[in-house]
Image 1 (cartoon, rainbow over the protein chains, first blue to last red):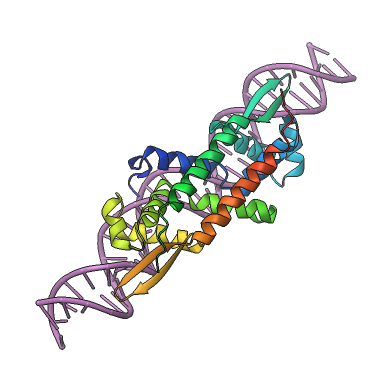
Image 2 (tube, rainbow over the protein chains, first blue to last red; image 1 turned 30 degrees about the vertical axis):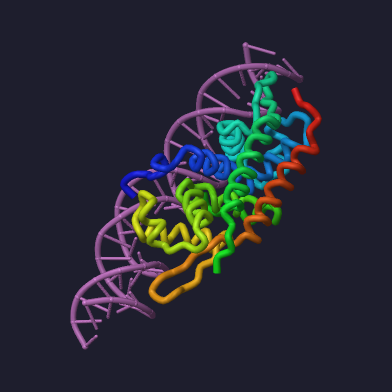
Amino acid sequence: MAYSKKSEFKDDEIAIAEFAKAISHPARVAILKEVAMRQSCICGEIVEVLPLAQSTVSQHLKELKAVGLIDGTVEGAKSCYCINWAMIEKINQLFNQFFEKTQCCKTGCS
Amino acid sequence: MAYSKKSEFKDDEIAIAEFAKAISHPARVAILKEVAMRQSCICGEIVEVLPLAQSTVSQHLKELKAVGLIDGTVEGAKSCYCINWAMIEKINQLFNQFFEKTQCCKTGCS
DNA sequence: TAATTACATCGCAAATATACGATGATTATT
DNA sequence: AATAATCATCGTATATTTGCGATGTAATTA
């Protein structure tokens, strides 16, 4: 592959791809749902309901946190995660914009 | 890694992840936009505007087609691609549902 | 019919992602 | 203080994705 070409695209294209990537694995979709269903969520609770090892869940949580979909704070020995609702809303709008912008070009091809 | 765990998740989680994956690369976001902006679109036209080789673009087109986001029909020596608006709408709703369902659990954590 | 155009597919190299056990760091419990 | 619990990170194996040149196929043009 030599080099990744990702950076050669436009900012909005990269942004959409980045957020899509965050939920492009069922485990992360499931984790998001689990965190959302609880007011605040301990890592161990997620490990219990998912078919993944603790280290794997921790890694997925890290990725979700990296794009800002969840927040994480240390509470004693535990780590408390919760949804970043502002970011959820932002991404929802980003996707809507993308699909709408796409839709407005609709002219009925073949 | 031994095995992929993707199949061990719920159908709706897998579905969301699958569509998210389709637009999880800037190239495919860009391609979707290009195809949308034209009534119908020849592969070569996309190759001209993207910083990717023809074979690479062809591969991305194949992926978008596989999830149903675009349709492709052969027209003589050329291949004509166009957006599958019904699928765009379906995915848009899928994402909206996901984010809404997530939102309704909102109770204000920490 | 030969050459050209348009595109898909193959084969391969390199980059990334996924998954886990082991280990480390930190706090809680005994 | 020793032990246990909770979680992050590291190292590593494997799987998947990305990208391209080369090649194959089909239609178009010369």
